[in-house]
Image 1 (cartoon, rainbow, N blue to C red):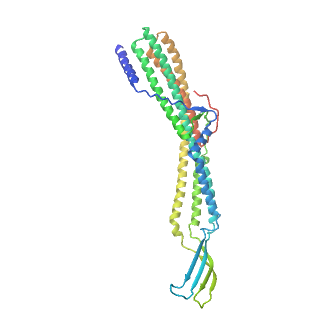
Image 2: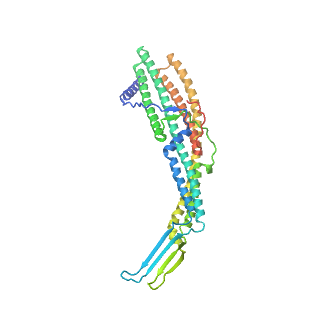
Image 3: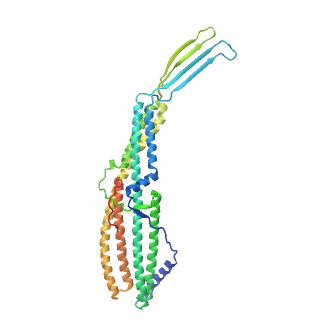
Length: 423
């Protein structure tokens, strides 16, 4: 028994020396303040603005508008003016003169304008749905950032509570040592516990600061919402998920683009119309005329195969991306639902464990004051109670985080709800 106490004393003495000589990692970054005016929705809006979502949507809409404007053009290409002038060979003076001017008009094939209008409409719908899907993606980043901060805050609060308890026990152990009721090893044991808890607090502060810096970089805000809890949605419609709607719109856009290109890539008929003034020599009268020339190309499909192949490849890529996305969304939903079940089960067990350890701590405190147990055993029981309480706080936050992640997997954009009681 003596050797066991001696070994224990040496271990805690080494721990105390190592903690006391280790470089302190004290972070002076104050926690971010809260704002009652902020919510998950308004934080998302700030993030979307910082991300440039509105500019991206405007660019996509301009593309659709230009497609629509192109569909309303009367010709497949811009009109062109052809002018030709012939005269005598240099040095000859026969009076030969020919003037010709023609206007070249490239006609549209039947069905090109309706196909371009359909492509424009599909592009406009794809832009709108892609903006919603991107907003949902940003919402997931905001949710993660906010709950990382909340976990960091709870970890810091738990570390501060553990440190306060350790300091209280160190003061009690010092008083008992000076009164001769405790040994030096017990007093060093309490001191080492205090230093270890202070080190844990520094680590928790570091995690909190990192989470807050990530939030600031994401949102550009220096405040967090005072409340951002959500009510979980326990049902999902994969086909109505914003990401799936965006993928379906991308497929439709690619298909309409291919249909439009099939028509517009083929060479269109060309009409040349204009006057001609001609004189063979000085004795010949002018032969003025007005002509119309029509060019009808044929066999042009083979020359557009490479362009059409790229468009067909784009359609195939969009369709495969839609299939992969559906599988990913279904898997993400099941994983989020499973995570919520695990979090709720862990929360229930944490509640039971916290109740049991709290009762044991009360009993141990009475026993310690009566001298029935030593400080080592009392510290172990108190630490177990503190850790159980800290674990309960973390489980409450993780359970609420799991609810938010379930909403993210279901494709739910934020809805403001009153926050439940914080631990």
